[in-house]
Amino acid sequence: MVLIKTRRDALLAPLQTVSGIVERRHALPILSNVLLEKTNEVLTLMATDIEIQITTATVADGDGSGAVTVGARKLQDILRSLPDGAEVSLVLEDKRLQIKSGKSRFNLQTLPAADFPSMTVSEGQITSLSLAQNKFRRLLTQTLYAMAAQDVRYYLNGLLLIIDGTELRAVATDGHRLAYASTEITEPSTENAGRQELIVPRKTVIELNRLLTDSDDPLVIELLSNQVRFRFGQIIMVSKLIDGRFPDYQRVIPDSLRHVVSFNRVSLLQSMVRAAILTNEKFRGVRLILGEGGLKITAANAEQEEAQEEIEATYDGETIDVGFNVSYLLDVLNNVSDETIEWGFNDASSSALLTIPGNERFKYVVMPMRI
Image 1: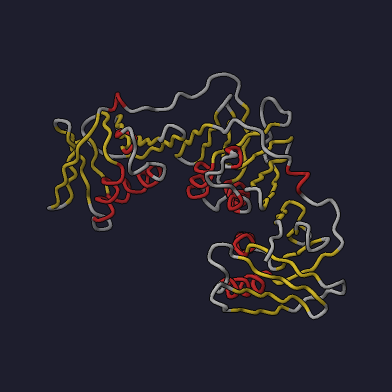
Image 2 (image 1 turned 120 degrees about the vertical axis):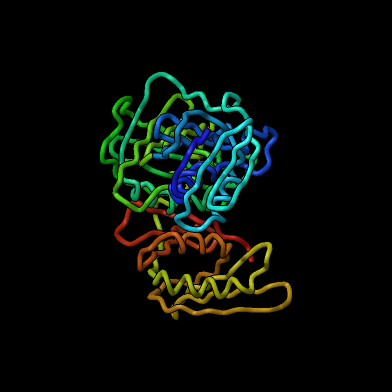
């Protein structure tokens, strides 16, 4: 039975959309597969890792309807290797899926569609909100780098989203730095309009950042009892939430600052990149000395090698000598696009606050380190 007959790109694009969450090696072999389900001319593709599920659809010719699961990575690699614009047919015969294109033939093992563990979506009251994809993607870009990875404090391995009236806030922290960003919601939540908080897992956040576009196309976010569902374009993503209590981020952000210094973001970034070359590979520490002449950045490693950079800045306070993990500074400088960035601080032993002039919707707090 010819399940699908279409152009290579028309099949590869939706397959790449869903296969990002597929693990190469999994205790359950079927979780390495993608579900292909054909109904009339609509082909639905679904992938899951039990925690996240992504579904998308496309139009494809073919004389039959049916469903099957096949290795996502192998199918993707085969389609990628075919010429652009090539005609592709997927033929289902006796538990094997044959991919035909020109004189190429590939036979892949399949597993029954009935065994595919699709997630059960929570029933009950739904809170939904809508905003442009580019606004939400900017929110992710400005915060996701501060998420923890495999921290024993499991609630830090994700992004806190706060829905408060017409405002959506995102907060991420790994205990050493914290990123905060907010945006306005064009269509506030339809039900349960009070303040709501949810912790979205790290993998979901990274996958969303990959799939969302820099367009004004709508993104609908639906909050379920223990899940969140994102709808945009032809894509539906359902994710479990992290059940935990996120730290009070407002206590981390300094209320008042004794000094605020402005820097050209690109100049500061380039100086940090050069200084980082000679940092200790494990601790990645740079020393920042701020005085009347501006900012001096120094780095050294175990081989007695040293780097020094100087940046002009207007500052007339006492000399500040402080150390930071250069990776934490590079993260924020790479993920904001504004021309100027402000560094606010009280003294060398307290955390620094990096902000964008005239923008109260972004804050980045970073703890100092001993050099």
